Image (cartoon, rainbow, N blue to C red; front, side, top):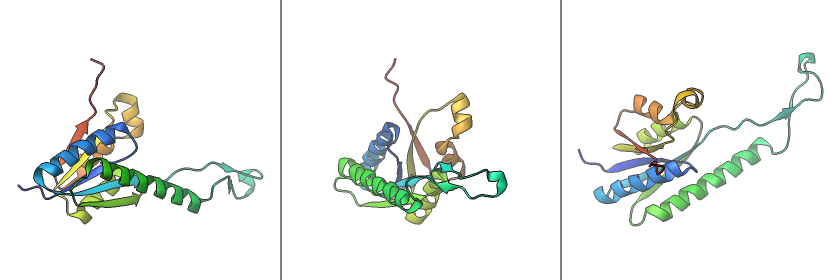
Length: 159
């Protein structure tokens, strides 16, 4: 199997940066094209009410409106993608995807759109209750992907 296109999932974590470094190393080795994807999950904004919800009043959003929030998130995502590309993507063709929604679903959709041969993602290595509550993006991607997925664990330097 020849690896021609690699999709790398990133976020602001050191786990994702480690996986990106690994993914770009593979891309350089195979002279593969890279798809860099950052998924913005919807944020819950606090609400305040003028009176009791049971009386049928409509909640009002406090602070930043939804359009401003989306713009701020999109700008941060673009900055992350540019920074990662500059750091690891020298001499490679890099396509970027900036999506809104579920992280696992977004990664899978982008892998199909990009026609990736491999997905590279990092793992936060959550276990127990944290994993039950937070879920596992890596596990969801592995379970539903139609192509190979490389899950890169973050090295534990505490030993």
